[in-house]
Image 1: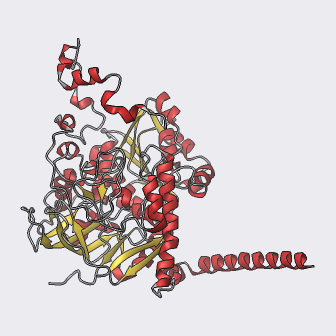
Image 2 (image 1 turned 60 degrees about the vertical axis):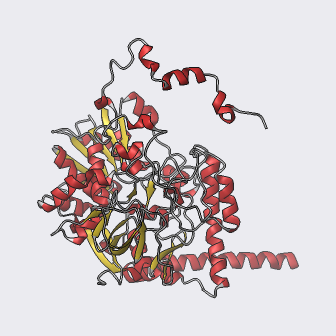
Image 3 (image 1 turned 90 degrees about the vertical axis):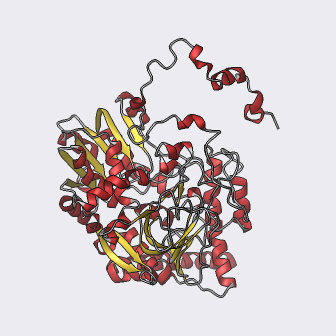
Length: 183
Length: 386
């Protein structure tokens, strides 16, 4: 695989300029800071600018939450945040797809579209797990059809009838095709 | 415990046996939920539009509750405190939190750097289970959770966790000046609050655009706004130009986000083919309806990776685009004062009060806008336990 600039971040071409700026020698640059105006920040007044942005390496951090489950993290950050949610760790096929997605940055469609794919597969996995535990799907409750029946009955009946009609028509077309094939 | 349990797009179950949350970090608290709301942005999760929404997760980022346990490092919050819990999970010490951008915390969401940590908002929001349950784990308990002021109605308190500050920030981001004409796209709870607060900043004309008549009627009463149905227009942008002397609004607020409607192209590419993150019609209209040099404030939620928006007009018209997740903790003192002094009474927006057990119905009603619903409130069975 071809080495790209982000793989050798410690030796990138303008490191000297970056180091000089980090050492606060920017004051050597003519005109540095003379037109600075915190109120010209487009986030003002929502952000109370106090220079903390420039303490990005040295800010006070909470203790690290024990990582006792698999936590995927964005490649755009160095590691897991000090605190994280412990809901639904990745598992199964969808988990494998999520692990692949997290190899790509948040700027890529691969990252997000792969996660959407994992979500859809995860929903199917959920149904399989339910069946394995003897839990049958209950769309009347879980999809809120009960609420539709109570508050939106004519539209609900119309929708259900249209769906039933389309399914029946689909079956009939399939049946006719199969009949022609067997002849 | 009882908890809402996501099973896939448009499918929700009431889980009766979800394990109760535990202290996982010295700064954690466990809160017994007393009131919980469903947010318009929960519908993006419900509709399957937010990536990394995993089966088994519990949603809910607007809740109040009683502190039942605290971690060894928690110093301010005590067991028994009745708190409102802002939807932002915020550490309080990172550069963003220190500058009061609590919605952009750097230490609460490992999964996405573009998103802060939020309760019950997919793994894209940090993977935290949310408040549509009997108990919740609340990290960084000393930072954002706030003891409910004496005398404050619990329903107003729970609205302070998101919808009120989010609506306020939508107006604040607009940089509204005295005499401004403000257009708010979307008459959902956040849009209603944004329209209501536009007056606080000195607007002299507030226009709300939506397609649901009962919500427009509510906007007229609750937000004192002109309210128009875009289904009765051929071109909402042209309508707004004509309504503002062919000048455009001073400020446009997009309080819709990715679940918009009104443009076939946006709907097909966004909701049908998933070629963009939902339907960005409201943003398109906002950019086109604002005056040259005007401000567009985005408070509606859009998902990654992108949306169709007229960037050329943004540049050519010299528009300032401002957007962020609300920084609830920053705004709380001001908004608590507005409520306690009676200037606003946001609980008027709560139209439906349902037991937590009916959470699947509540989502469907909110999603399909049944029974003239504006804002549904969930009450867990142990809400009043001693």
